[in-house]
Figure 1 (cartoon, rainbow over the protein chains, first blue to last red):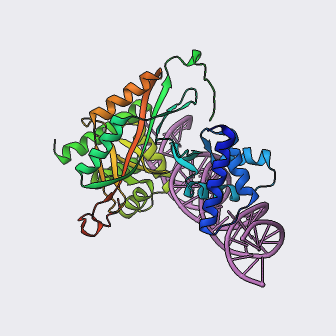
Figure 2: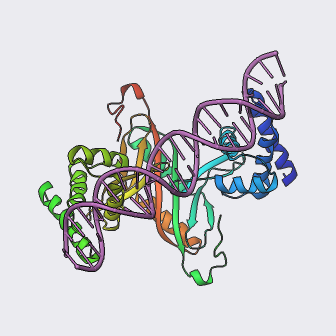
Length: 157
Length: 157
DNA sequence: ATCCATGCAAAGCGTTTGCACGATC
DNA sequence: GATCGTGCAAACGCTTTGCATGGAT
């Protein structure tokens, strides 16, 4: 599906969620979703605040925090703690498989990965202790081998 | 080595660190380390504050936060983010191998694990992207299969 | 008309910092 | 006696909340 279709699908998902929960379909909620669709990637709440406020002035940050939580509940966004203690958000695309993150602390790149072996070992470990796996947090922290020559340097995302 | 020897070794490690860094050997720093030796486990800064203040009244929480950081630098403690955004500390025993954590959200248990396959895959993933592994955050979140009958219920650590 | 959502500002939480006093080297 | 550490309280960064107004159903 192309970008326009995907955007429409996400808006439909939002509308459905609002309808089934008996919540209101407000412009702010749609604008915040649009900002995500336009920018993609892994954004902190703070970054969303400034992006949204650039594009649609007058939206309070409380609304943004409340909406981010709502979009996560609606399974439109996923939240991760890529660096200690700061939440990052990204679009959750229904077709996509779950993935984890590799963060480069030199150049700021965020790389998504999915490793079936690791996934399987996690299941096994939970089972081994008589527990049911409900989720995991897995971030691999790295540095560039040659910071001077990294083409992604200084990127902040 | 028995508990007393181990405690002595940790104090020696602290003294050495302070000496080589030209820092002072204060009673507070020793008392905070003693609290860790006595209680072990995975403690949040908040828990350390209340444990230390119970045992040795009059220590300010700023001192505790500063000392926790110092003990991590001295490689006497390790810090982890077991739940989003709250730091937990535990004794780093030199002989021990690195480990990750499995947290049960029903009963509060924290189980340490080390999985060579996962470790190897992480190395491979970093290498695959031309990056150097510097660390990782890996927490497996679980629930008890049968919460009613879990012998560890309600434990908060 | 009802009730939810918004914007603002204030409060919250865990953590850090500025400062004068006190301790260690 | 110089310098570093401490305790206190105030500031911090990120996030949440109380409240009166505005908007969606």
